[in-house]
Image (tube, rainbow, N blue to C red):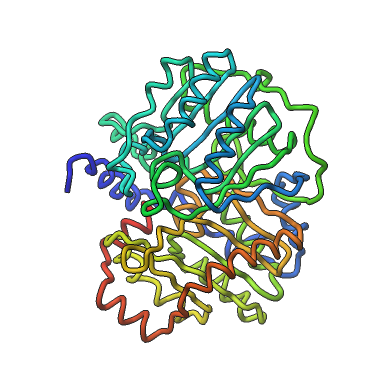
Amino acid sequence: MRERHLPLIAILLALLLLASCSTTKPFTEGVTADPTLTLEEKYEAIRAKEVHLPWPEAYFEADAFLERYIELINSAEDHILISTFMGTACEGLEELYQAIADKAREGVDVYFVMDGISSYDMTASAQHMFPLYFLRESGVHLIEYNPLSFFSLINPSTLILRDHRKLVVVDGRWCAIGGMNMNYISLGADDVDLQRDSMYVFDSPSLASALTDTFVTIWNEASVEKVGRERFKASAEGAEPIMRGWLFNQGPGSDDSMSEMFSALFSSAKEEIVLLPYLAFFDDRMYESLAAAQERGVKVRILVPIDSRDYVQASLFYDYHRLVEAGFEVWMEFTGEETGKPLLHQKLAVVDGQWTVIGSSNLNFRSMGLSHEIALVLDNGPFAQFSLEQAAGLQSSMERLDLETALALKEEKGNVFSYLFSYYGG
């Protein structure tokens, strides 16, 4: 194993020792697990932040979102806030980073947070990436969140908690959230390596304000250069809101919990739960929550992509038979050279054709408490149907996974050590 990956091994060891800092108890205990309450009552009880939103621009192709991203950057007149899990430069992203640098030179305040694990990218991006420190020369305020170093070993909690959020705010009006990172495999690759994902752009001063709160909090925690929240004003313009939603910000300055968000949805479901999770590693409580919904007559359908990387496949195949054994309808898609399909990195959940979850959070043990996440629950039937149609298009290229096949894959390719690494570190 290359020396550059040794910090990742240190992270895994710390995770195994300190995993108790993550909790999935809300899936089976407390108000969010109560099937007698409505979703609105549950979210009110946990003080979820309600927002009112316009219909978003939805992007499932990286090329289209990159073009829109550059447009948003070029439109900025006052400030740009960017947070990404993976942030590196490559040839395909030159125009984007040039636009960011140009805006900083023009006097637009550009603040940029990337997680400190960016330099340890283990995807195809590892062969095409360059650090983003050059942006500082243009006046961009750039920091790494929890950078990996020898000194971080003294405090293992800094190794565990990563900032997995992806968000953009421009001029207190335009904002974007979703699953696309700012690296080669997410936005800058060619058709062979470019993964499939989703980003949503909102013309919403209300959401922009809430995301700015999130950004300022993480910036001031991670940087010696503090910034006042009053610096970033909300716009007086924006599209007319047509739908209600709840914003969940799992991270500094917030008590929000991805476990509570998903638990409330699962325990409120009456007809169907459709999940598109990347790296779906459930613990016993998460299984119990979905099984309880199933016992009430709710259909649970899970669409699982299989990463082409050998160690990821070994981790997934070690565990995915449990999804079938639980009685869930599981559809699986292989990716890689044998299929010509790049990685499906999208995260999506739709419940009862009414509620839709978008954002950065995976539906797995790690995202429930070992990383900072952003997610939106949208309460809108037409948008849920739009999302279900997009999921159906993905499912059309998948195969139904039966127990015999799942157990054979575990025997042939499953590996417990890869599983543990992905369960805690994925």
